[in-house]
Image (cartoon, one colour):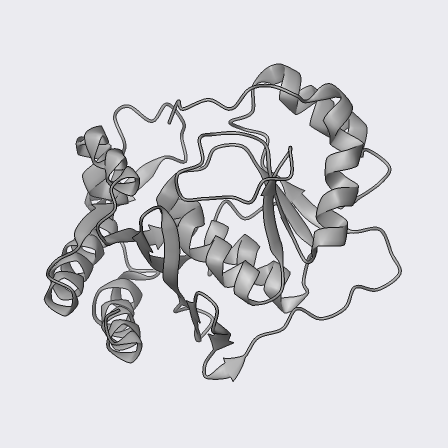
Amino acid sequence: MPDVDAVTHLIERVAHDIVMPKFNALRDDEIHHKPTAGHVDDIVTVVDRDAEAQLTRGLLELLPSAAVLGEEAAHHQPGLLSLVHEDRPVWIIDPLDGTSNFARGHNAFGIMVGLAMSGEMRAAWINLPARGESFVAEAGAGAFCNGDRLAIPPPDARRPRGALFVRYMPPSVRDSVLSSLAGHIEPTMHTGAAAIEYTDIIRGRQEFAVYYRLLPWDHGAPALMLVESGGTVAHLDGRPYSVRSPNQLTFMTRDSQLATQLRDLVAPGASTAPNHVR
């Protein structure tokens, strides 16, 4: 394992030197649509690219034997996704999760870094620079924010609140999820940033999120963070999420009881096979 504090400091430097100086200060020529993404919010900025480059250099200095899977690099070289199926250490980087929020001047964005080995997450970092929050987790050692140990607060008596990310669900799965959960949950507007959705569950601001597309830079680090805080990340069949999991209906929840409750509500009509389309 690399020095956890050294990774934390590297991410904080990137946030300070690269990310925040461009917050509310991006020029139009520093924002580009990803040519193959197919959605108006799929953009990349100079910040994404510069942050990933500096994180890659710094992380390899801390652990030279590791491979690096960065979101922007994988966009140009999709074959890099196969790195999570190797047994060597792999740094997984989302240099600016919530890019569209960042570009609009909204504070719902963050930097996420994870370290995986043999398909298992060993450590995770989430930095929310506009919120002044720095999260760190190690497998089996708990999770912390700004040095304080994290524990998900108990729920209140109301219906569970959470976000449904239906955009990438097959139509039959989407329809089943929406109809089966209607009346049983209090839906929230999602932010489009996993770094925010997961940490909001940890903080007790909502109780769950439901996803289908499982890109490793979106879910690897925050899944470990949630689990080490006492939460659960599980597929429809109850198996735990892995950074090697193919796309499928997946529940991120405050605890295993809520995960079971949501899966039982959805299961009768959403049993589609996992797929590997990214």
